Length: 282
Image 1 (cartoon, one colour):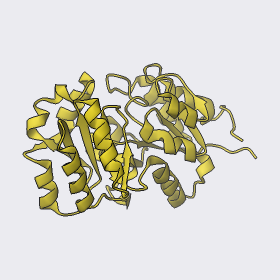
Image 2: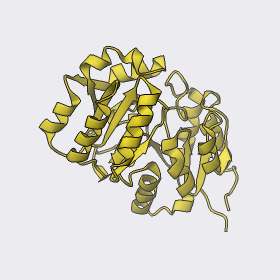
Image 3: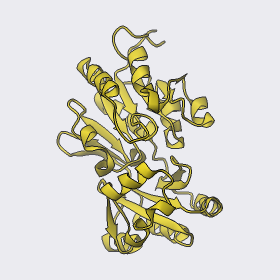
C-alpha cells in the first residue's frame, strides 16, 4: 500500500543547519514548498525553544516544535505546551551532583530557556569544540551563579540537563554513574556532551505522539537527523533519513542516507520523498 508523507520532523545541528548554524536559501525554499503542500513540518531538536534560531521559531506555516529531545512539544502559534515530559527536580539534582564532580559546564532548561554556570561560560572554549556552538551558547543561555542552586530554588520539573565535558575519560565515568540511575534517558548529540532527560523521552516518541494528536499515522511521518539523539525517531517513524555526516549507528537506523548538512541533504531528501512528484513510499 502506497502512502504519502504528512509530517516531517527535522533535527537542527548537523541536519537542517549548516556548519555555520545557518539555514540556506535552498533548504528554506524546500520547507516552504512542503508546508504549501499541507505537510506538517517541525523542528525536532535537543535545543530548548529559545535556542532555536528566530528564523525558524517564526517560520511561516511551521505550527509546532519538538524541543529538548521531546520533553516539550509546543504550538508555536499560541505558545501552548501540547505535551511535556519533565525531568524531576530530585533526578536533576542527582545528575548535576554526579557530573559536577568533573570538569564540566553544566546547563539546565526550564520552560524552553537554557541556563548555564556563569563562571564556566566565560571559559566556553574549553568545553565547546565548535566555534559556532560557542557563539550559539553565548547568544541563547542565561548565565547564573550556580545551576544547582537554580534547580533547588525552582524546586520543580525541568526540560533537560546538559553537561559539556573537557575530558572524554571523565565523560565516560560520568555516563557510567548516570546509567545506574534507571529513571534517566542519556544521549550525546555532540560527542563531548551528555544530554539528560526523563526516562522514555526521545524525539521518536514525541513525533509519534504529535502525529496521534493530528491524526497522522507513524508510517506517514518522515524524520531527518544525524546524532544519537535522532536514532529512535529514525527507527520508529515511517521513513528515517540519516545525513551523510552522521555516525554509522545513526545511518544503520535509517531507511535512506542523504547528502551532508553542508550539501542541503535534508532538503534533497524532502524533495525526493515528500513533495508532490517525488517517490511514493510503500
